[in-house]
Length: 290
Ligand SMILES: NC(=O)c1ccc[n+]([C@@H]2O[C@H](COP(=O)([O-])OP(=O)(O)OC[C@H]3O[C@@H](n4cnc5c(N)ncnc54)[C@H](OP(=O)(O)O)[C@@H]3O)[C@@H](O)[C@H]2O)c1
Image (cartoon, rainbow, N blue to C red; front, side, top):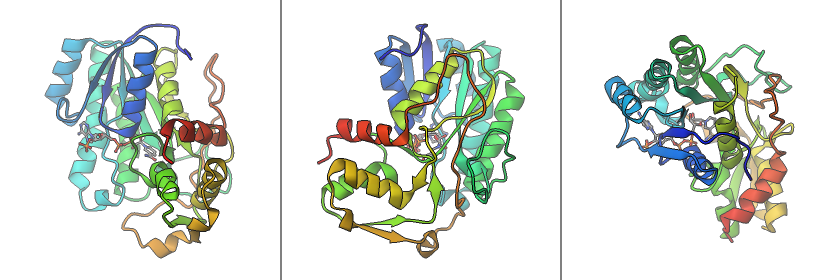
């Protein structure tokens, strides 16, 4: 289905990543001229390379899907994390402003402390904890400073085809009859990469600037809630799911206990994304994992 009205020349960064692949698929499906560059073709931390690429391609829009995303690894690889998540975002934002391209970049629900019982909206004040979370927040600030027209899409608990994170591989594991441990005391708003990618592309052609929260609709769930819904929808054995507390995992980086996102910022003619359970059904249908 087409949700956008203009054909655009779109530059997608971090092209081998999960969201980037969905963005490429969606943009190509609506007839955009897509230039999807993997890290080997464009390292966003390299300011000269970014500038030259944007000068050469002259895209109408840049969808930044590149990032250092290893939350635990970031604790030991601070420099690499900041190079992509702060300098990289700044480089793209600056060159986008210089060459008059729309700039849409992704941030994270991890910018919040996780203590709020209700959904975090764009009006809540970030309080990131851990190297990855702080770098993503600094990336948000760098984008706004370098390019006042930048769009920062905060999302969370993203899953999709080709993804290697827990939410993305859960259907395969359950389909293979493997037992999984799913955290029952950590909450987020799941987001299907295909829906997020479509919304990023829509934002690229709207008159909109600043931060917006984008997730599938609903009040979210826990990892074990997600796993149980998956088992129900996919016909997997729910006995394979062991509920554990996040504290038992002893991971290097802190995580927010509840980073569920809601949005108070409306964009003209854009409604909410479909609910997360509907999105999960579509993911299962396309993933063909059983
Ligand atoms: N997954 C989630 O649940 C989640 C939640 C909230 C926000 N986000 C945000 O969503 C965005 C997309 O995440 P994702 O899940 O699609 O991540 P992903 O699958 O890990 O993809 C990120 C891509 O960025 C590339 N990259 C890293 N450093 C780069 C650099 N300096 N220059 C160019 N490319 C670089 C990576 O390449 P290599 O493989 O070569 O490193 C990788 O292909 C990120 O901004 C992330 O912070 C994700």
